[in-house]
Image (cartoon, rainbow, N blue to C red; front, side, top):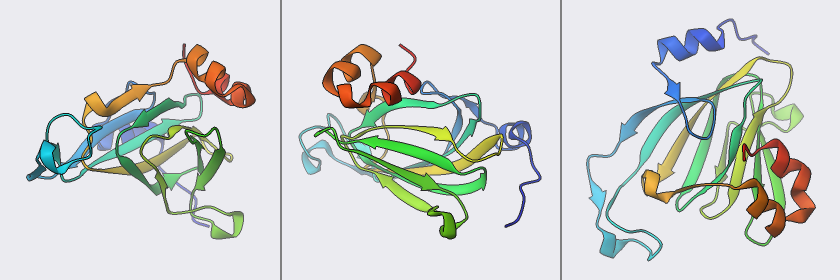
Length: 171
């Protein structure tokens, strides 16, 4: 396996990343010029949405992507650094993590999807200091479709995942 020679600071500067409300660093890299009108979208959306959007996302070891959910599917793409564990909690309470990385022998995937409506959050796995991934959302991301998880609400709804919820929420 090739060893990453760049640091988190290198990627943050090189890719012009900014802090993300869920944790980590990001920058939108693509927003489709065309949009789907509200009438063509499921009723959970209000207003039109770009066909698709994409970001770079970097997570450092001492940080986490807090549990949140979107109204759209989000495809995650591994780029560099340590593997990343993305934890999914389905509306029925099922927990299914996936591991992004470059080593299929260890069950790591280059791509995986967080389905619309699932709660999900992420943390660096393995021994590296950071993970660099990309995320593609379709229909395109809009902050009005983003819901940050509340520790107390999620713990009440999914008591079987209390340890995970405590680890991946800020309040």
